[in-house]
Length: 76
Image (tube, rainbow, N blue to C red; front, side):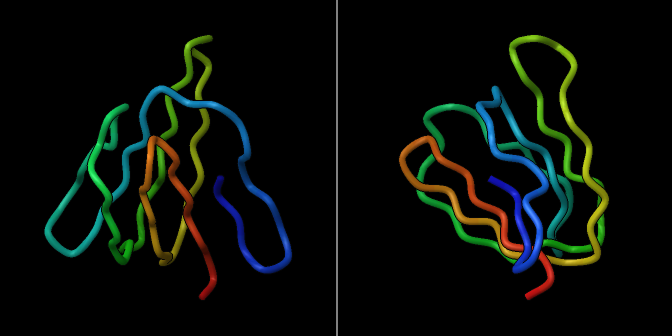
């Protein structure tokens, strides 16, 4: 899920998600351990099995990973 208080940007299955925090670019894949980070201005890339994927440009946000679920809160 990628959403802000007033809009849902993405809510579907994905294979991986890529973003940027203060230490640089990173990827989240299936089986990733619990993870919490502040996101820097970047373009979040979500890869899907269908190959089309999704790209969302953000200014900042928070990413939370738990049990193969990724939640990104924007505009917070």
